[in-house]
Length: 390
Image 1 (cartoon, rainbow, N blue to C red):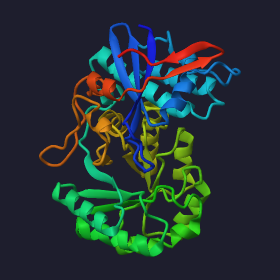
Image 2 (cartoon, helix red, strand yellow; image 1 turned 60 degrees about the vertical axis):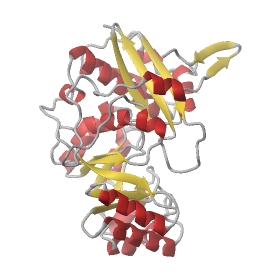
Image 3 (cartoon, rainbow, N blue to C red; image 1 turned 120 degrees about the horizontal axis):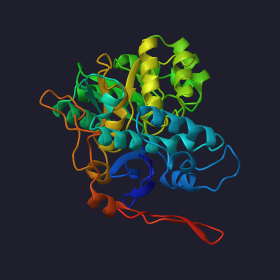
Image 4 (cartoon, helix red, strand yellow; image 1 turned 60 degrees about the horizontal axis):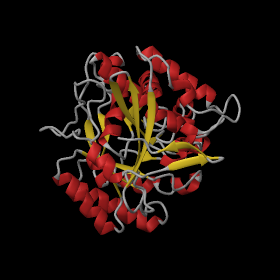
C-alpha cells in the first residue's frame, strides 16, 4: 500500500493573543493510503510549515517533504523510519523541516495503526500502555492573587501535580517571589509544584541563578526552560551551580541530537519532548529510550489538543517508571473540542491511552470546518497550495 495524499489544514481561533498559549491555532495533518486515513499535528507556525510542505526545490538538500512521502510504501514501522530519515535528508537546509515532519510522522503512525488494527504503543514494541499521572499545566496569573486562585482550583480538581509557567514570571525578583509563594499556597504543601520559566532568560545564567533560592523555598519539583533550547552551555553552567532544583528542558528540540546534548552536556534531569516539534513519534521514542538508559526522567510536552496529547504519550506509554504527563487545563475551544473523544482522567485521576487502533482519537469534521482558515499560495501565477477539502 502506498501513500496517496498529504493534506495540511490551518485552524485558528478568531483572535490570537500575544500570550504563551500554543492552543490558539493548529496545523492538522491528514494522510491517506488506500482506504485508510491517519491524523497528526504539528506544533509549529502553521503557515510556515504549509510553505515548507509545498516549497519548490532550491537544491538537493532543500526540497519539499512531499518528495519523500508521496507514493512511498506504508506497510510496517520500518517504512515510517525510512520516511523520517529521507525527509530529514532532503530537507536538511530548511529550518522548518523538523516541525513539518512531526505532523507527517504522527499521521503515518496513526494510519499504520488503523491498517494493522493496533494502537501505536503496540507498534512501538510495548506489551501494554501504563497510565500516566497528569500534571495540570497552566500559565501564571496576571498577579499573585490570580496565581493563588489557579492553584487552589487545580488542587480542588484533584490534580496531584501542578505547573505554572510563562506570564509575568522571570522579569522581577520580588514579583517572582510573590507568584511562587502564591502558587505554593494555592496548591498546598504536599502537591508536586513545577515551574516553567518559558525561556525568559534566553542564555543569562546569572538571572536564572538569582531565582534558585526562591525555588528552593517553595520546594519546586523542577525549573523548566530557563533558557532557549539551543543554549546548551547555559544549561550546563546553571546545573553546575545548582544541585537542589532539577532542570527540565527539551521541548524546543526539533532534532533528537539537541535533546541528547541537553542530557549529556546541559545537565538536565528531566527531558521533555514534544512529538509535534522533534520530528514526530519516531525520534521521540529514540529519546525516551535514551533517557531510560541515562536514568533521566522523560516527560511529554504538549500544550495544544488531545490529539497531540495522545501522540506525545505514545513514545513512553510502555515505560512504567516515567509516570508523569503534561495535561493542559486552559486550552482554547479549538484545542479542547478538536477531537470527538478525549483523554479524560479516570476515577484515580490517571490518564490512559485508548487501546483502539492508531492514536485512538478522531478529529471532529465540524470543529475543523468551524476554525478552518482558507489559504492559497501562488508562485509565478500558479497555485501550489490551496486549503484541502474536509
